[in-house]
Image 1 (cartoon, rainbow, N blue to C red):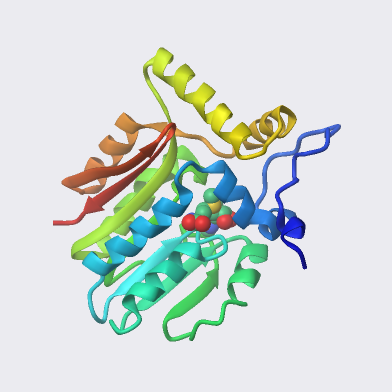
Image 2: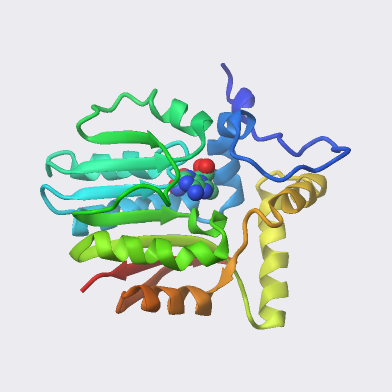
Length: 243
Ligand SMILES: C[S@@+](CC[C@H](N)C(=O)[O-])C[C@H]1O[C@@H](n2cnc3c(N)ncnc32)[C@H](O)[C@@H]1O
């Protein structure tokens, strides 16, 4: 297998019909390349998750990686908490993704891979919950109940990591960020056709909120310490602490 086999070409050819985006086998196969070239700062976000794990994960607690895709965040966390006697529960409802996660050579007492809907899994005794670019795929009405469930399941002092693509309420800022994001994707090797076909496929599948909506929802869920730790064009990542 060469690196070229794993290059994201999902939207490279003109499609007669652009179907709604799915995390299926063809996406899972190239997902590492896709997310690295599509999310500004993705590698940094993973490194930050490792730093949060080092600071916040406590012995005997649970860590949840919700919408884990290929398990990159779980692997980074596992590196940090190897000796902390905690469990990492990584969940995704894409069987193609979870099958690939199960090929990671990690002991099952450290990471459990679950093919389930994140809305169905119980959360408790958590010191850290990761929603790295996942909440945006839930129907908007289900986002607050999801955050409330996470807040309830976190131990005091536990943290939620929430990374999302965002829209901006200020029209000029929104337009500027969209143009910069398009420029970013071009520098990462995507053509105009790939960018526009993927944008169409994601419409009504990835529904972004504004920063104001995220902050208010985190407050409504119960979080009082909310720190934006990263922003790259139209992507933000928050650390929300349960005090
Ligand atoms: C952009 S990817 C997340 C990237 C990943 N967290 C990382 O750090 O590499 C979104 C993932 O969320 C999963 N997903 C979306 N809705 C879900 C749901 N309701 N339950 C479980 N997984 C879900 C998708 O299958 C996909 O793998």
